Image (tube, rainbow, N blue to C red):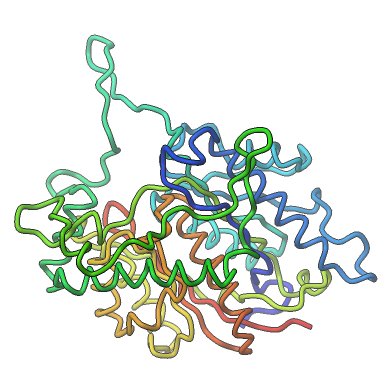
Length: 399
């Protein structure tokens, strides 16, 4: 454990509703999704300050804003969103791109900055797939050659599309269609139950999409799904394959971020609890099997700390595809019943650069709901190009 003036702790987390791309949030650009989340975090953290701690979290006391983004137009969306949120011009911003891992890696980077020198950071991720710019290579004659996604690996190593990579993982690790469908259906049912119980209410920041109209809830979970309907979905990415639209995530727009600082500073702000960042790791794997990257990172991280996956009280994995999620759980010895307790991206959607931060937002909410001092939590995400990031967290009361 680091000294309290350097031990990173996450004391607040917020997210937008997650909505299908080209849907309810399609008019909002990335910085317009993120700015309300940042404002919500400032309000949450300031409201918790003790009377002897002054005015709480003053916006000018934020050291930096570190934000992940995967398919935006560049230009440093972290800085733009910070200014849109009303932070003073003295607060800088840094945008991180590790594709799907960007949001989690932004939090990892902020935690390492706290460990190196203290400070207080707003960190997370955002994606507006609906407003992402069209991208093109320039031909020799200056004309545009549009493409749908960037290249993630040399062709000599293989650079499969995400769905093809999920099929590769399913075949290589023997993940059946039946298991994928059962897991995906459970994700929807858990997300529906969580929403009905109000478990997402405290973390969602409503978004005004036009005068008099706001979006306040996720729109992905489908109550109409059942085993018979799941079985009717045909394979999408390979003839005779097992990966379907039913057991794959959908693209979503959304943002999520956290407040991360030292335990010492958190106490000064009046925070009563939080998630300690105990360790992080990012690993590389074969690009053809990119979906297994999270398991490689988590395995190395847990081994370094002398832990096993069974020591984790809470686990959140980004469910881009049921196939890769189950393969990673199998590799780590994680019972799928004990992970993603409130559903995951199969039901809520995958907002690329935001998804890793959504995992941490969910873990903080779940840890607080349980209230068990010292419980361990694991956030994991697999990443395009053959990578994975994992973060080991521990719940601690600070009061």
